[in-house]
Image (tube, rainbow, N blue to C red):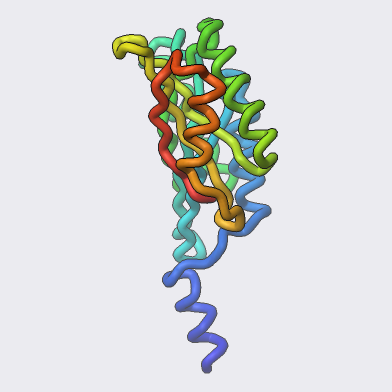
Length: 173
């Protein structure tokens, strides 16, 4: 009786997502040529037929909003058919033709990799309306990594030589 109760209650209280399901969802979304990357995948499993997930998908900001909506709706429907999961996809536009943004992303990624290869960024945007311009991004820090985000912030500022402000959101992964 205890085992049956545990099997029923554990998903409701929260359990680590099945790595195989994470891979299947990731592979499905990333298999579309228009999807440049994904992040922030969350899965909620309430038992058979009651699985829900959300993910952020990066698409070029050159696409029309209606085109993006159609692409993501198609992926959500495919996830329902193939994986029996209700998937909601958030659209993150990426400026793929912005050389300055691409250079900043490379610089920040290199600095982080030198600090610890487990650090990564996503959702990088460049706000040129501020003086100096602000680079905004989400910094993914694994729970297992004991590192001070303020230290990371200061290292990035020194590398960017006060040319940019940094707006960094922390994602613990």
